[in-house]
Length: 432
Ligand code: SF4
Ligand code: SF4
Image (cartoon, rainbow, N blue to C red; front, side):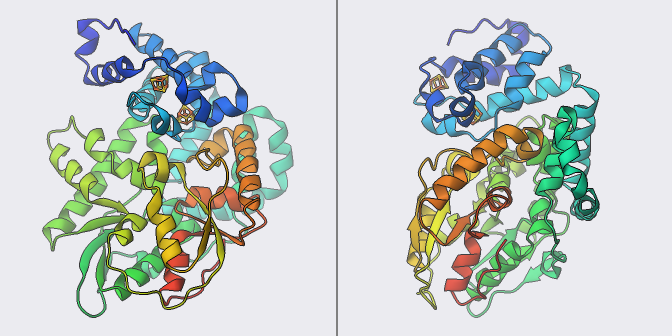
Protein backbone atom coordinates (compact mmCIF):
# COMPACT_ATOMS: atom_id res chain seq x y z
CA UNK A 1 0.00 0.00 0.00
CA UNK A 2 1.39 3.41 -0.94
CA UNK A 3 1.66 5.90 1.87
CA UNK A 4 2.38 9.63 1.90
CA UNK A 5 3.60 10.52 5.36
CA UNK A 6 5.76 13.64 5.61
CA UNK A 7 9.31 13.46 6.93
CA UNK A 8 8.18 15.37 10.00
CA UNK A 9 5.50 12.73 10.67
CA UNK A 10 7.99 9.92 10.18
CA UNK A 11 10.25 11.47 12.81
CA UNK A 12 7.74 10.06 15.33
CA UNK A 13 8.90 6.44 15.85
CA UNK A 14 5.32 5.25 16.39
CA UNK A 15 4.23 6.71 13.05
CA UNK A 16 7.34 5.34 11.36
CA UNK A 17 6.53 1.85 12.66
CA UNK A 18 2.92 2.09 11.49
CA UNK A 19 4.03 3.33 8.08
CA UNK A 20 6.24 0.24 7.67
CA UNK A 21 3.25 -1.96 8.53
CA UNK A 22 0.88 -0.12 6.19
CA UNK A 23 3.31 -0.48 3.29
CA UNK A 24 3.20 -4.25 3.61
CA UNK A 25 -0.56 -4.47 3.06
CA UNK A 26 -1.40 -5.27 -0.57
CA UNK A 27 -5.20 -4.85 -0.10
CA UNK A 28 -5.80 -8.48 -1.10
CA UNK A 29 -8.60 -8.89 1.44
CA UNK A 30 -7.77 -12.51 2.37
CA UNK A 31 -7.98 -11.42 6.00
CA UNK A 32 -11.66 -10.46 5.74
CA UNK A 33 -12.76 -14.10 5.50
CA UNK A 34 -11.36 -15.01 8.92
CA UNK A 35 -12.22 -11.79 10.76
CA UNK A 36 -14.97 -12.48 13.33
CA UNK A 37 -16.45 -9.00 13.11
CA UNK A 38 -16.60 -9.06 9.31
CA UNK A 39 -18.11 -12.54 9.42
CA UNK A 40 -20.70 -11.31 11.96
CA UNK A 41 -21.47 -7.81 10.66
CA UNK A 42 -20.62 -8.07 6.94
CA UNK A 43 -19.32 -4.50 6.78
CA UNK A 44 -15.96 -3.85 5.08
CA UNK A 45 -15.19 -1.21 7.71
CA UNK A 46 -15.45 -3.96 10.33
CA UNK A 47 -12.84 -6.04 8.53
CA UNK A 48 -9.06 -5.83 8.97
CA UNK A 49 -8.62 -4.28 5.52
CA UNK A 50 -11.31 -1.68 6.22
CA UNK A 51 -9.76 -0.82 9.58
CA UNK A 52 -6.30 -0.58 8.03
CA UNK A 53 -7.65 2.01 5.54
CA UNK A 54 -9.31 3.97 8.35
CA UNK A 55 -6.12 3.96 10.45
CA UNK A 56 -4.00 4.97 7.44
CA UNK A 57 -6.32 7.86 6.68
CA UNK A 58 -6.31 9.06 10.30
CA UNK A 59 -2.54 8.82 10.80
CA UNK A 60 -1.53 10.13 7.37
CA UNK A 61 -3.68 13.21 7.75
CA UNK A 62 -2.57 13.70 11.35
CA UNK A 63 -6.24 13.89 12.30
CA UNK A 64 -7.73 13.35 15.73
CA UNK A 65 -9.88 10.21 15.87
CA UNK A 66 -13.57 10.67 15.01
CA UNK A 67 -16.73 8.77 15.85
CA UNK A 68 -16.53 6.59 12.73
CA UNK A 69 -13.04 5.29 13.29
CA UNK A 70 -13.66 4.82 17.02
CA UNK A 71 -16.77 2.75 16.27
CA UNK A 72 -14.92 0.36 13.95
CA UNK A 73 -11.71 0.11 15.99
CA UNK A 74 -13.73 -0.49 19.18
CA UNK A 75 -15.47 -3.38 17.41
CA UNK A 76 -12.11 -5.05 16.68
CA UNK A 77 -11.47 -7.90 19.13
CA UNK A 78 -7.67 -7.80 18.71
CA UNK A 79 -8.08 -11.53 18.11
CA UNK A 80 -5.30 -11.38 15.47
CA UNK A 81 -6.93 -13.96 13.18
CA UNK A 82 -6.08 -11.49 10.42
CA UNK A 83 -2.38 -11.84 11.19
CA UNK A 84 -2.56 -15.62 10.86
CA UNK A 85 -4.31 -15.28 7.50
CA UNK A 86 -2.31 -12.40 5.99
CA UNK A 87 0.16 -13.65 3.35
CA UNK A 88 2.10 -10.37 3.44
CA UNK A 89 3.07 -10.39 7.11
CA UNK A 90 1.12 -7.26 8.07
CA UNK A 91 1.56 -6.70 11.82
CA UNK A 92 -2.01 -5.63 12.50
CA UNK A 93 -1.45 -5.95 16.26
CA UNK A 94 1.09 -3.13 16.42
CA UNK A 95 -0.96 -1.03 14.00
CA UNK A 96 -4.20 -1.30 15.97
CA UNK A 97 -2.33 -0.77 19.26
CA UNK A 98 -1.01 2.51 17.84
CA UNK A 99 -4.50 3.46 16.61
CA UNK A 100 -5.98 2.77 20.05
CA UNK A 101 -3.38 4.93 21.76
CA UNK A 102 -4.09 7.70 19.20
CA UNK A 103 -7.83 7.40 19.91
CA UNK A 104 -7.21 7.60 23.66
CA UNK A 105 -5.13 10.78 23.15
CA UNK A 106 -7.33 12.58 20.65
CA UNK A 107 -10.97 11.51 21.08
CA UNK A 108 -13.38 12.49 23.83
CA UNK A 109 -15.77 9.61 24.40
CA UNK A 110 -19.29 10.15 25.75
CA UNK A 111 -19.32 10.51 29.55
CA UNK A 112 -20.73 7.08 30.45
CA UNK A 113 -18.26 5.35 28.11
CA UNK A 114 -15.39 7.31 29.69
CA UNK A 115 -16.56 6.42 33.19
CA UNK A 116 -17.02 2.73 32.31
CA UNK A 117 -13.54 2.49 30.83
CA UNK A 118 -11.98 4.39 33.74
CA UNK A 119 -13.70 2.02 36.17
CA UNK A 120 -12.49 -1.08 34.28
CA UNK A 121 -8.93 0.28 34.23
CA UNK A 122 -9.16 1.09 37.95
CA UNK A 123 -10.59 -2.27 39.04
CA UNK A 124 -9.65 -5.19 36.78
CA UNK A 125 -5.85 -5.08 36.96
CA UNK A 126 -5.88 -5.10 40.80
CA UNK A 127 -6.93 -8.38 42.44
CA UNK A 128 -8.12 -6.82 45.72
CA UNK A 129 -10.24 -4.21 43.97
CA UNK A 130 -11.56 -6.82 41.55
CA UNK A 131 -12.49 -9.18 44.39
CA UNK A 132 -14.34 -6.35 46.18
CA UNK A 133 -16.12 -5.39 42.93
CA UNK A 134 -17.27 -8.99 42.38
CA UNK A 135 -18.76 -9.05 45.87
CA UNK A 136 -20.61 -5.80 45.11
CA UNK A 137 -21.74 -7.19 41.76
CA UNK A 138 -23.83 -9.81 43.56
CA UNK A 139 -26.00 -6.98 44.92
CA UNK A 140 -26.41 -5.54 41.42
CA UNK A 141 -27.52 -8.76 39.70
CA UNK A 142 -31.27 -8.06 40.13
CA UNK A 143 -30.85 -4.89 38.02
CA UNK A 144 -29.28 -6.58 34.98
CA UNK A 145 -32.53 -6.49 32.97
CA UNK A 146 -33.04 -2.74 33.58
CA UNK A 147 -29.42 -1.88 32.75
CA UNK A 148 -29.52 -3.87 29.52
CA UNK A 149 -32.47 -1.79 28.28
CA UNK A 150 -30.47 1.48 28.44
CA UNK A 151 -27.88 1.47 25.60
CA UNK A 152 -25.26 3.50 27.50
CA UNK A 153 -25.56 1.21 30.54
CA UNK A 154 -25.32 -2.09 28.64
CA UNK A 155 -21.66 -2.56 29.64
CA UNK A 156 -22.68 -2.44 33.30
CA UNK A 157 -25.36 -5.07 32.69
CA UNK A 158 -22.85 -7.25 30.82
CA UNK A 159 -20.36 -6.90 33.67
CA UNK A 160 -22.92 -7.98 36.26
CA UNK A 161 -24.00 -10.90 34.08
CA UNK A 162 -20.41 -12.14 33.82
CA UNK A 163 -19.71 -11.84 37.55
CA UNK A 164 -19.64 -15.34 39.08
CA UNK A 165 -22.15 -16.33 41.77
CA UNK A 166 -19.36 -17.33 44.15
CA UNK A 167 -15.76 -16.16 44.41
CA UNK A 168 -13.05 -18.63 45.43
CA UNK A 169 -10.86 -17.66 48.38
CA UNK A 170 -7.46 -16.20 47.53
CA UNK A 171 -4.71 -18.81 47.29
CA UNK A 172 -1.72 -18.69 49.66
CA UNK A 173 0.35 -20.23 46.82
CA UNK A 174 0.05 -16.93 44.93
CA UNK A 175 2.02 -15.09 47.63
CA UNK A 176 5.65 -14.23 46.82
CA UNK A 177 7.97 -17.10 47.65
CA UNK A 178 9.67 -20.19 46.29
CA UNK A 179 8.05 -23.59 45.73
CA UNK A 180 10.92 -26.11 45.62
CA UNK A 181 10.84 -28.90 43.06
CA UNK A 182 10.65 -32.50 44.31
CA UNK A 183 13.59 -34.85 43.76
CA UNK A 184 16.27 -34.04 41.23
CA UNK A 185 16.04 -30.39 40.20
CA UNK A 186 14.92 -30.17 36.56
CA UNK A 187 14.58 -26.40 36.21
CA UNK A 188 13.72 -23.07 37.78
CA UNK A 189 10.91 -20.86 36.55
CA UNK A 190 8.93 -17.82 37.64
CA UNK A 191 5.15 -17.84 37.34
CA UNK A 192 2.94 -14.86 36.58
CA UNK A 193 0.22 -14.54 39.22
CA UNK A 194 -1.56 -11.91 37.14
CA UNK A 195 -4.77 -10.14 38.04
CA UNK A 196 -8.28 -11.33 37.10
CA UNK A 197 -7.36 -15.03 36.87
CA UNK A 198 -5.94 -15.06 40.41
CA UNK A 199 -9.38 -13.95 41.65
CA UNK A 200 -11.69 -15.90 39.33
CA UNK A 201 -9.83 -19.21 39.40
CA UNK A 202 -6.74 -19.32 41.63
CA UNK A 203 -6.70 -23.12 41.23
CA UNK A 204 -5.20 -22.67 37.73
CA UNK A 205 -1.88 -21.43 39.10
CA UNK A 206 -2.05 -23.70 42.17
CA UNK A 207 -2.41 -26.68 39.84
CA UNK A 208 0.42 -25.44 37.63
CA UNK A 209 2.75 -25.04 40.62
CA UNK A 210 1.73 -28.46 41.95
CA UNK A 211 2.43 -30.20 38.63
CA UNK A 212 5.70 -28.38 37.97
CA UNK A 213 7.10 -29.04 41.46
CA UNK A 214 6.14 -32.74 41.21
CA UNK A 215 8.12 -32.79 37.97
CA UNK A 216 11.18 -31.39 39.79
CA UNK A 217 10.86 -27.75 38.70
CA UNK A 218 11.38 -24.98 41.25
CA UNK A 219 8.68 -22.33 40.90
CA UNK A 220 9.30 -18.77 42.05
CA UNK A 221 6.50 -16.29 42.68
CA UNK A 222 8.56 -13.09 42.54
CA UNK A 223 7.57 -10.15 44.76
CA UNK A 224 6.38 -7.12 42.83
CA UNK A 225 4.63 -8.91 39.96
CA UNK A 226 1.31 -7.49 38.83
CA UNK A 227 -1.11 -7.35 35.92
CA UNK A 228 0.66 -7.81 32.58
CA UNK A 229 -0.95 -4.61 31.27
CA UNK A 230 -2.99 -6.21 28.46
CA UNK A 231 -6.35 -4.96 29.73
CA UNK A 232 -5.34 -1.30 29.68
CA UNK A 233 -3.15 -1.75 26.58
CA UNK A 234 -6.23 -2.82 24.61
CA UNK A 235 -8.06 0.29 25.83
CA UNK A 236 -5.29 2.50 24.42
CA UNK A 237 -3.99 3.46 27.87
CA UNK A 238 -0.40 3.25 26.80
CA UNK A 239 1.28 4.80 29.83
CA UNK A 240 -0.57 2.51 32.23
CA UNK A 241 0.32 -0.53 30.09
CA UNK A 242 3.99 0.46 29.99
CA UNK A 243 4.02 1.04 33.76
CA UNK A 244 2.73 -2.53 34.28
CA UNK A 245 5.30 -3.87 31.83
CA UNK A 246 8.15 -2.06 33.63
CA UNK A 247 6.96 -3.32 37.03
CA UNK A 248 6.98 -6.93 35.81
CA UNK A 249 10.29 -6.56 33.98
CA UNK A 250 11.82 -5.30 37.25
CA UNK A 251 10.32 -8.18 39.26
CA UNK A 252 11.51 -10.85 36.82
CA UNK A 253 14.92 -9.25 36.30
CA UNK A 254 15.49 -9.47 40.08
CA UNK A 255 14.45 -13.15 39.96
CA UNK A 256 16.85 -13.78 37.06
CA UNK A 257 19.69 -12.09 38.95
CA UNK A 258 18.92 -13.99 42.16
CA UNK A 259 19.18 -17.53 40.81
CA UNK A 260 18.47 -17.60 37.09
CA UNK A 261 15.26 -18.52 35.32
CA UNK A 262 14.67 -21.05 32.55
CA UNK A 263 11.31 -19.52 31.75
CA UNK A 264 8.58 -17.17 32.91
CA UNK A 265 5.48 -19.34 32.97
CA UNK A 266 2.17 -17.81 31.94
CA UNK A 267 -1.13 -19.62 32.35
CA UNK A 268 -3.37 -17.06 30.63
CA UNK A 269 -2.60 -16.80 26.92
CA UNK A 270 -3.93 -13.24 26.74
CA UNK A 271 -1.16 -12.22 29.14
CA UNK A 272 1.37 -14.33 27.22
CA UNK A 273 0.79 -12.43 23.98
CA UNK A 274 1.39 -9.12 25.75
CA UNK A 275 4.45 -10.23 27.76
CA UNK A 276 6.05 -11.65 24.61
CA UNK A 277 5.56 -8.14 23.16
CA UNK A 278 7.24 -6.30 26.09
CA UNK A 279 10.46 -6.14 24.06
CA UNK A 280 8.62 -4.18 21.38
CA UNK A 281 6.52 -2.10 23.78
CA UNK A 282 9.59 -0.90 25.69
CA UNK A 283 11.98 -0.68 22.71
CA UNK A 284 12.16 3.12 22.93
CA UNK A 285 13.03 3.14 26.64
CA UNK A 286 16.82 2.85 26.94
CA UNK A 287 16.58 1.83 30.61
CA UNK A 288 14.26 -1.08 29.83
CA UNK A 289 14.68 -2.13 26.19
CA UNK A 290 17.25 -4.89 26.80
CA UNK A 291 15.69 -6.17 30.03
CA UNK A 292 12.24 -6.24 28.41
CA UNK A 293 13.57 -8.14 25.39
CA UNK A 294 15.14 -10.70 27.74
CA UNK A 295 11.85 -11.10 29.63
CA UNK A 296 9.92 -11.54 26.37
CA UNK A 297 12.41 -14.20 25.30
CA UNK A 298 11.85 -16.13 28.55
CA UNK A 299 8.03 -15.91 28.50
CA UNK A 300 6.40 -19.29 27.85
CA UNK A 301 2.86 -20.51 27.99
CA UNK A 302 2.65 -23.47 30.37
CA UNK A 303 1.82 -25.83 27.49
CA UNK A 304 4.76 -24.53 25.48
CA UNK A 305 7.04 -25.23 28.46
CA UNK A 306 5.64 -28.70 29.14
CA UNK A 307 5.79 -29.68 25.46
CA UNK A 308 9.56 -29.18 25.55
CA UNK A 309 9.86 -31.02 28.90
CA UNK A 310 10.77 -34.67 29.21
CA UNK A 311 7.44 -35.73 30.71
CA UNK A 312 7.05 -39.14 32.35
CA UNK A 313 4.20 -41.50 31.44
CA UNK A 314 0.88 -40.24 32.85
CA UNK A 315 -0.33 -41.83 36.10
CA UNK A 316 -3.81 -42.37 34.65
CA UNK A 317 -5.20 -42.26 31.12
CA UNK A 318 -8.66 -40.77 31.59
CA UNK A 319 -10.02 -41.48 28.07
CA UNK A 320 -12.36 -38.48 28.41
CA UNK A 321 -13.45 -36.76 25.18
CA UNK A 322 -12.21 -33.17 25.34
CA UNK A 323 -13.11 -30.29 23.03
CA UNK A 324 -9.98 -28.15 22.83
CA UNK A 325 -10.75 -24.47 22.34
CA UNK A 326 -7.66 -22.61 21.17
CA UNK A 327 -7.80 -19.05 22.51
CA UNK A 328 -7.02 -16.40 19.87
CA UNK A 329 -4.11 -15.18 21.97
CA UNK A 330 -2.80 -18.77 21.96
CA UNK A 331 -3.20 -19.65 18.26
CA UNK A 332 -2.96 -16.23 16.59
CA UNK A 333 -1.10 -14.17 19.19
CA UNK A 334 1.54 -16.74 20.15
CA UNK A 335 1.20 -19.31 17.35
CA UNK A 336 0.91 -22.10 19.92
CA UNK A 337 -1.24 -24.57 18.05
CA UNK A 338 -0.22 -28.20 18.39
CA UNK A 339 1.36 -28.29 21.89
CA UNK A 340 -1.82 -28.19 24.04
CA UNK A 341 -3.55 -30.81 21.85
CA UNK A 342 -0.52 -33.09 21.79
CA UNK A 343 -0.08 -32.83 25.56
CA UNK A 344 -3.74 -33.70 26.14
CA UNK A 345 -3.56 -36.65 23.72
CA UNK A 346 -0.33 -37.91 25.33
CA UNK A 347 -2.06 -37.67 28.71
CA UNK A 348 -4.81 -40.02 27.51
CA UNK A 349 -7.59 -37.65 26.50
CA UNK A 350 -9.46 -37.93 23.21
CA UNK A 351 -9.11 -34.47 21.70
CA UNK A 352 -11.72 -33.00 19.36
CA UNK A 353 -11.44 -29.64 17.64
CA UNK A 354 -14.61 -27.60 17.12
CA UNK A 355 -15.44 -26.26 13.66
CA UNK A 356 -14.44 -22.64 12.99
CA UNK A 357 -11.70 -22.97 15.58
CA UNK A 358 -10.02 -19.84 14.20
CA UNK A 359 -12.98 -17.62 15.21
CA UNK A 360 -12.91 -15.76 18.53
CA UNK A 361 -15.33 -16.73 21.33
CA UNK A 362 -16.04 -13.03 21.91
CA UNK A 363 -14.27 -12.71 25.26
CA UNK A 364 -11.24 -10.60 24.23
CA UNK A 365 -10.33 -8.85 27.47
CA UNK A 366 -13.03 -6.27 28.20
CA UNK A 367 -14.75 -6.80 24.83
CA UNK A 368 -17.54 -8.91 26.34
CA UNK A 369 -18.34 -5.95 28.58
CA UNK A 370 -17.86 -3.07 26.11
CA UNK A 371 -19.28 -4.80 22.99
CA UNK A 372 -21.66 -7.22 24.62
CA UNK A 373 -23.97 -7.76 21.62
CA UNK A 374 -21.28 -8.82 19.13
CA UNK A 375 -19.59 -10.75 21.90
CA UNK A 376 -22.77 -12.73 22.68
CA UNK A 377 -23.21 -13.62 18.98
CA UNK A 378 -19.65 -14.93 18.79
CA UNK A 379 -20.03 -16.81 22.07
CA UNK A 380 -23.20 -18.56 20.95
CA UNK A 381 -21.60 -19.53 17.62
CA UNK A 382 -18.56 -20.88 19.49
CA UNK A 383 -20.64 -22.82 22.03
CA UNK A 384 -22.73 -24.39 19.24
CA UNK A 385 -19.57 -25.59 17.49
CA UNK A 386 -18.09 -26.88 20.74
CA UNK A 387 -21.24 -28.76 21.71
CA UNK A 388 -21.40 -30.33 18.23
CA UNK A 389 -18.13 -32.15 18.96
CA UNK A 390 -19.94 -34.43 21.42
CA UNK A 391 -17.18 -33.83 23.98
CA UNK A 392 -17.92 -34.04 27.68
CA UNK A 393 -15.57 -31.25 28.75
CA UNK A 394 -13.91 -28.19 27.21
CA UNK A 395 -10.23 -27.37 27.72
CA UNK A 396 -8.68 -24.02 26.97
CA UNK A 397 -5.73 -21.92 28.09
CA UNK A 398 -7.18 -18.50 28.83
CA UNK A 399 -9.35 -17.39 31.76
CA UNK A 400 -11.29 -14.95 29.55
CA UNK A 401 -12.38 -17.79 27.25
CA UNK A 402 -13.21 -20.02 30.24
CA UNK A 403 -15.54 -17.39 31.70
CA UNK A 404 -17.07 -16.53 28.34
CA UNK A 405 -17.74 -20.10 27.14
CA UNK A 406 -18.86 -21.30 30.58
CA UNK A 407 -21.49 -18.54 30.65
CA UNK A 408 -23.41 -20.29 27.86
CA UNK A 409 -22.16 -23.88 27.50
CA UNK A 410 -23.90 -26.91 28.98
CA UNK A 411 -20.61 -28.74 29.49
CA UNK A 412 -17.86 -27.84 31.98
CA UNK A 413 -14.98 -25.64 30.88
CA UNK A 414 -11.54 -25.98 32.47
CA UNK A 415 -8.00 -24.80 31.97
CA UNK A 416 -5.91 -27.33 30.02
CA UNK A 417 -3.42 -27.56 32.90
CA UNK A 418 -6.10 -28.99 35.21
CA UNK A 419 -6.64 -31.95 32.90
CA UNK A 420 -2.90 -32.49 32.48
CA UNK A 421 -2.31 -32.29 36.23
CA UNK A 422 -5.05 -34.87 36.83
CA UNK A 423 -3.52 -37.28 34.32
CA UNK A 424 -0.09 -36.83 35.91
CA UNK A 425 -1.30 -37.72 39.40
CA UNK A 426 -3.04 -34.54 40.64
CA UNK A 427 -6.56 -34.04 41.94
CA UNK A 428 -9.54 -34.35 39.55
CA UNK A 429 -10.19 -30.95 37.98
CA UNK A 430 -12.57 -28.62 39.76
CA UNK A 431 -15.01 -27.25 37.17
CA UNK A 432 -15.81 -23.64 36.36
S1 SF4 B 1 -7.91 -8.52 15.18
FE1 SF4 B 1 -9.64 -9.92 14.83
S2 SF4 B 1 -11.48 -8.60 14.89
FE2 SF4 B 1 -9.69 -7.24 14.66
S3 SF4 B 1 -9.49 -6.94 12.45
FE3 SF4 B 1 -8.15 -8.68 12.96
S4 SF4 B 1 -9.42 -10.51 12.65
FE4 SF4 B 1 -10.82 -8.73 12.74
S1 SF4 C 1 -4.53 -10.17 4.11
FE1 SF4 C 1 -2.81 -8.82 4.72
S2 SF4 C 1 -2.18 -7.83 2.82
FE2 SF4 C 1 -4.21 -8.68 2.43
S3 SF4 C 1 -5.64 -6.98 2.92
FE3 SF4 C 1 -5.42 -8.21 4.79
S4 SF4 C 1 -3.76 -7.21 5.92
FE4 SF4 C 1 -3.64 -6.44 3.80
